Image 1 (cartoon, helix red, strand yellow):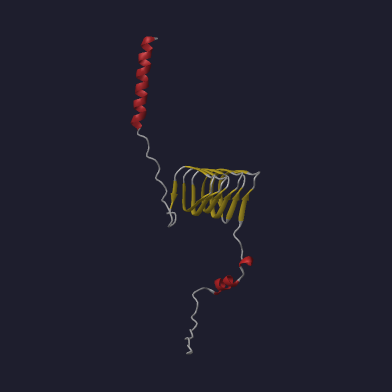
Image 2: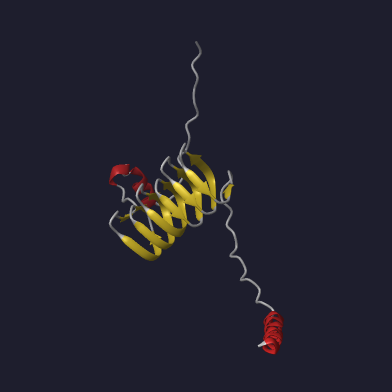
Length: 175
């Protein structure tokens, strides 16, 4: 058998800063975790909820939810909100629009009433969804905000007003 000699590589200066390289060597268990936000079963909130890490909604919420990480809608949760998160797992009830950039999972007890956009969809037997569903395997596109609806023409009010006056005039002749 013939001996094979491998060329030795010269070590290049890393483009990664030393602090980042040291952090990469820290065990995963001791790294700082993203905060977990929990709305417990007895809680009821109304408004806008901005979650910087992962979130668990176990109670009632109404408004808008923006979650940077994974969002769990608990089995007994009742959410009436527009939801935007990296991943969404629905075991309770949501009424509103859901945008899951990564994965949207509807468990057997999950109920979604509203439109949804996601890049990966998992639906267990027994889950319920009413609304439009858009699955983008390449990732959910960032959509520009919709323009405001055009103002109603002023002539419509005048036409209705004129016809009301004519009806009053005709009825006035009978009574």
